[in-house]
View (cartoon, one colour):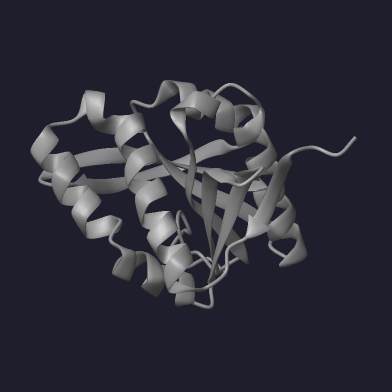
Amino acid sequence: MTSPLRILVAKRTAATAAQLAELGRQTFHEAFAAQNRPEDMAAYLAASFSPEQQLAELQDPNTVFLLAQLVQDVVGYAKLKLHSTLGQEEGKVPEERLEIERLYILEDWIGTGLGATLMRRAIEEARQQKCRAVVLGVWEKNTRVIEFYRRFGFKPIGQHEFRLGQDVQTDLILRKGL
């Protein structure tokens, strides 16, 4: 029996951009609205998840979007960035890295293994691209997700600022060697 879950590389179209904009707004809101001011959330969502912004991200040749599709519904996604310098030490020879910029699942699907499937596919993409490491940033207060990443072998290597509207937050930078 085949699984109803498929992980697909997103098409670089306006229709996909509109779908990603809606999914991105919903998943980000579900994940962070309770811990942040409404005005900061509104500013971030408007700047980051318009169809035009998503289309620009889709058309970047160094960006890959993976869509988690159950039957006909997209219930999660990952945004991957090739040639990332996130967490790279100055003065060191850069290593080829893939950054997981976003990995979000609709709230109803959290805890089902869907996020783990999407993560395994992102790591597989990094290996296919001959990367030596996968890196990501995660809000320091998001302990549940930090633990999820640790189960996949990610370790902290630093931190950086993340601006959510007017609120400057701290993201931990995590790395997994391949």
